[in-house]
Length: 391
Ligand SMILES: Cc1cc2nc3c(=O)[nH]c(=O)nc-3n(C[C@H](O)[C@H](O)[C@H](O)COP(=O)(O)OP(=O)(O)OC[C@H]3O[C@@H](n4cnc5c(N)ncnc54)[C@H](O)[C@@H]3O)c2cc1C
Image (cartoon, rainbow, N blue to C red):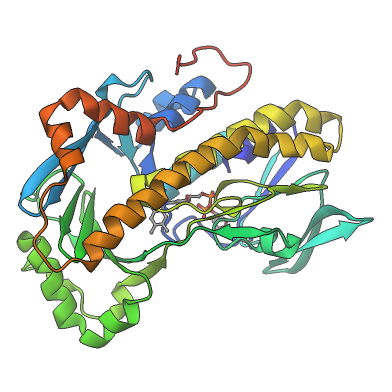
């Protein structure tokens, strides 16, 4: 959606295809990072965006065993917004699609599911999609696969996927929220369990992290046992946990971490999770996907006005974005292996690790995780727009 917006803004004729009828489907994260807010500032849409209901998180804290630790402090970032905004992703996508729709060259086709790629003389020249009215074929100078971690586009293109592995999946559910509940979104880490609660005003959106492939086992232990586990982590939910009366209210989200060895072919480019599926750790996947979009628009926008980009020009996008992707995934895999795997496999009570104790002792160190989470490696800026951060 972001790439569609940026290209339409540059005058390129764009079709964005979305298989669902709205954006209220699969969970894909709620975080809008300072670097994404900076992109919106550069585009002149930040003030309108901040009028939408959202929460502003200036510090990230978590409970480990009985101790609460502050992990990141965003208030020193070199960005206009020194906070992380929490907003349901459908509100964010609706907002961006409205901005994009102000450009006559932007076309959004909902309920249009890409099924395959169209090829001519060894290059990709478009897509075949399924719609309520039947099959649709669209021909394009460039096809961009931005269809997430189960990308049909990259599969149809036969691009090689390097799987980095993930030790966890996530059980995802809602529980009601009361006025005297804690305000903040927070995480609670105990031996064998990680529980994250996102404040969505009327309800808590809860994420219960489980060892990969154990959802079935948890189902078999029964809902009562699952409800007891939640209450152990957040006792104030004891009177509400009965709201979970059926496993249908609990979705299993599979976590994948991978990347393509090659993001492009003649006529085709993959970006976002389609090029590199991100772990939920640090909640940075949306940020990376948007940064890819900005880089792709900067590199290809003007070129697309003149015709089909050459393969070397498409490869320039990967060249620009590969380092931030690899560096972020490396950190995520390190945390998965050193922290998540250990926590989920542990039976003894947890204590705060020495590294996090240093953050408590020297609060200025919290600026480092804030920088990695909030801005990331090699931040992108919208080409030709003033007011950039000096990051
Ligand atoms: C459990 C979990 C929690 C996460 N939490 C966070 C978080 O809090 N913050 C964060 O930044 N990141 C988070 N992530 C990572 C984040 O979800 C992704 O990195 C990010 O959404 C990638 O954006 P994208 O646009 O590339 O893909 P997606 O957000 O997956 O979007 C792909 C879009 O393509 C559509 N689509 C798919 N197939 C087709 C098709 N064949 N035809 C047409 N349309 C299609 C989909 O419906 C979807 O709208 C989380 C990931 C997981 C698994």
